[in-house]
Amino acid sequence: MLQILIYGAVSSAIYAMLAVGFTLIFGVARILNLAHGAFYALGAYAVYTLTANFHLPLSLSAVFAVLLVALFGVVVERVLVRPLRRSTLAVLIITLAMALMIEQVLLLIFGSEARNVPSMIDATFHFSGVDVSGQRLLALSSAITILVGLWLFMQHTRLGAAILATSQDAEAAQYMGIPSDRIYSIVMGLSSGMAAAAGVLIAPFQTVIPSMGLLPLTKAFAIVIVGGLGSIRGSIAGALLLGYTETIIAFQVSIEWSQIVSVAAVLLTLILRPAGFFGKRAVF
Amino acid sequence: MTVAKIDGLGALMAVAALALVPWLIGSDYITGLLTVALCYGIWAASWDFMSGLTGRENFGHSLFIGAGAYTAGFLNVRFGLNPWWGLPSAAIVAILLSIIIGFPTLRLRGPYFALAMLSGAAVMQNLTIIFSEYTGGQDGLNGIFPVIESRLRYYYLTLFFLAVTVVTLKLIANSPWGIILRAIRGDESSCQASGINVTFYKIASLMISAAFAGLGGALYANYQLQVGPDLFTVVLSINIIIMVYVGGMGSIYGPVGGAILLTLLTEALRGLSEHRLWVYTLILMFIIYFLPQGLFAPLWRQLRKLLL
Image 1 (cartoon, each protein chain N blue to C red):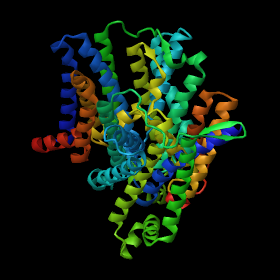
Image 2: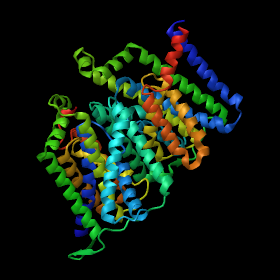
Image 3: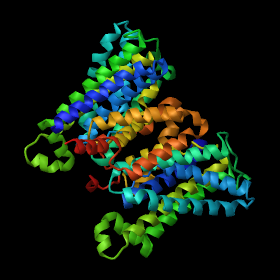
Image 4: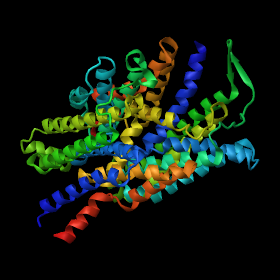
């Protein structure tokens, strides 16, 4: 039971990080970024390459991996997404194509076999009879730190205020002298950096394969819809809700039924309360 | 010549060209490939009718395709009905499904409708696996009895249905009905204010779209003689959307061109083995980036201008 509690918390935290990044770029720039899962995979592969091929120490390569992917995200936003931003469908398709592209390139370079990334902490911790690897705890605590850090950044800095203003009304924000195009780039960097960080943290205890981004993307999607598209608070609540519901159903009923939980939750949410738990009704 | 005459002539020439291909290239392989391409054409045209005209992007079109294909498969494999019954029943089941899913989801806008439809299809896909004793699970239903034994004749049957689909949808799209659907894309609240029953038109257009998608699904099932849960996947829906996009959204005939072009392109790139997918993706990105209006419909409009 305690094991479910801890493992559920770890996966919820990782999902929350992915979902918050996903909802952030949608809430601010109205970009539904289907390449979000690919950025997560890219983060895991970046940390793998930096440690295995460039022999950098693990902590340093983790930081570099996140920065590189964040930079890549900004480039994608500038070059591919910005010219197409007027059409939602075009953005969806171009980011989807980007995701396929990243997956194929990773497949070409690294092949389809799983890669291993060494743990940052080797020790194992005991909690009243349950063994938890240090890496999982590190992932949990880092995710919480990053999410709290993001919240503080949004609430207490000028840049955070500018981002919030843009998300509320991009046009009005622009009249107040906030350069909304630059805000979009910054948020895209933040969002892809968080996806990469999730990939980096999870890499040591997950199989690192080119298609690893697909499932977390669909989960992030579900979480964001249930919590409310564009709401950070909702994403965290949604991550906890879905993470635990899935674990419990997988444990009590069957794995097959647990697969349907997230999609059914999305459908129900959209039918009953399309704005999600914490979403703004005005979005419609 | 008037626009209508040129369009009619172009359609006749396209059908004639497609009908002649098996004669010119007498290979079963190409005929089979084209049959699949024509099925995609029916799906793409039916997607475009609902989503291209009303602007509600349906990311779960595979829901209707899979439902149609499974209906045809069920009736034949489980109940031993004549496979011809599969075609109308598939359309009817797809229409019923579209009513069930349409009422709660069509009030949603933008990405929300897209996501609701997407998860609807995902739920169905999961259900086919959960209830595998009836649906055959991952393996699906096998051993569907063919409608027509000859592959060549089946190709012509599919071509006939494609032509019926495109002509019907195009006629509706050009009628006052189609104008109302386009008006809904422009501004839904103004339509409502002018006394148009927006919900009725949206549901009706989804029903028509679903009927043809289901029919296409049954045709596809009868060609493959097998149905599987992959017919419900998001990947299929997204492929169809990409075909519509490449063909030119809102034109009905463009997406058919997009479907045939992309099916042939996928096949032509097969020689590249492991480089196939990224080259395909790169070509797609170029088309999306540089031709936001698509390829086929704008090309035809240019051609038409020359003939006028």
